[in-house]
Length: 205
View 1: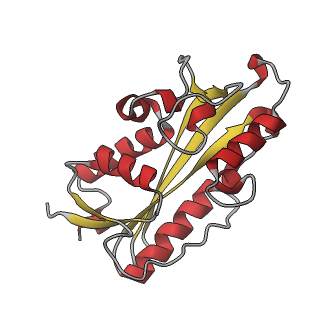
View 2: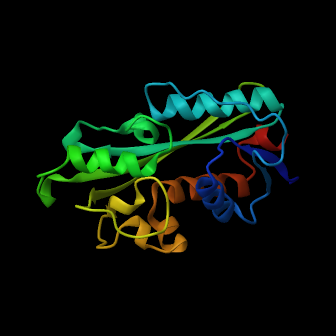
């Protein structure tokens, strides 16, 4: 089985690091925004994580003429009706302002007792080819929202997300501990198993 080239449809160094670590040794050569000039801005204005993941992977695959892997992920809080959801990265306005997003989240949840702070991380991974072939994987990590941020690791909402069965936040876990239980870690292991089995076939054609 030949090695396939696969573009990572993200500029987020944290995500790139997690993906590279989980897919290390798989029969793919991973390329990112540092490897190609003129990297396009990828639209993600869909209503669901699936919409956004497919859109980003398809846009990049068409632009580069190579298969692409896109992640769309976020936080769903039950007490907020599933918010911030697909708006997780720009919950407080500016895209990627993690501190502002966390501050707004905690303000919206102020006064809620521990038993009403249930939440989950959701990750959808989409593979897309320049020929419009598609493959989707969805995984979750259940947990709750802490009363205040803790920890220096991770990114996004990791400092306030406590995985089920843990007392530490995601940001207090090592990368290995985080990947073992996280939504993205689970989804990437699913993808890795497929790649090692030569699937999807079109990726290796």
